[in-house]
Image (cartoon, rainbow, N blue to C red; front, side):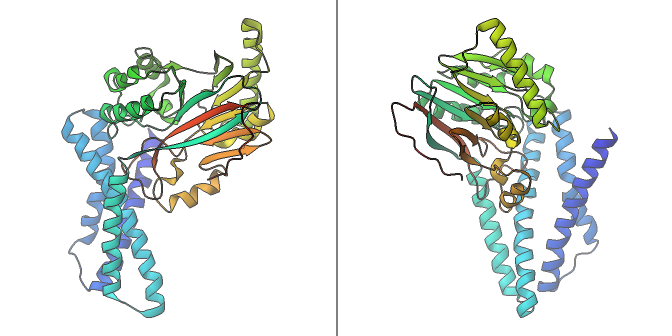
Length: 373
């Protein structure tokens, strides 16, 4: 409880500072002042936290729309902040130029509208990967970070499923954060997944942790999706491994899980180490250890590719493998930019993405080197 109070107090404080900066820059340039300006700025700063708790307590559509509206404003005011900071740099050189600020703010509003529109689009990106142990071509769809909840609901999931079926995959793999965790999720919200024409496997992300693993198991059991919690299954000549999300997980912890899985699978299913292995691990931080342990392809998400510029630059500090396809010594990592959004339903400098991975045997096609995005 105390941790939540501290966290949401910090969120409110940061939002207040963002609003105060935008107000301060515009008030000086356009020479105006709001009476009780701090109260005007406090209201939208507190509104986000209020909307978050409102949708948790009530599932009335009014609170859902209220949350979406406030979350959209949070994304918009951040873009306005960027415009204000750019103006401040210009002002240091040439002094106050109200017309320039007006132009920058107008551009920021236009970009916000574009980001909202782009936040509801879903694009498909394709890669071809050559794997030496593969005996038959396999078409894999990688989804991640759909965040089904208050913003993304069953209608959005239906669109994603329809696009997936059009691509005719052999298997659909979801590397975490299918749930948003902001509101309780119900079975009917995920029933569009039952229309998938291919088998579907899911591993946990941090938002499944927020939803509650027990609740996630209960809901997933009512769908055709198979939940992999530190578990391995064979799909033809491919072994698919799903690891449970662990906060502050280390490489050694992943190694212990993989070692345990290999032992259990060897004892129960006569594991063939020549099989192609695909690992679903929500965060891309453990690829180096997974690669050393012989994982052919690791699928991750979590980064959202920053979702809104310039966060795509900031996340590179914490995640060297940020987005796209990476290759080292014929081992591969794909980091999805996410198939949905978290917080503001906006995308600027990134896209909601369905990733199509065409896996081909080495003897069928020459190796095609991927480029890391």
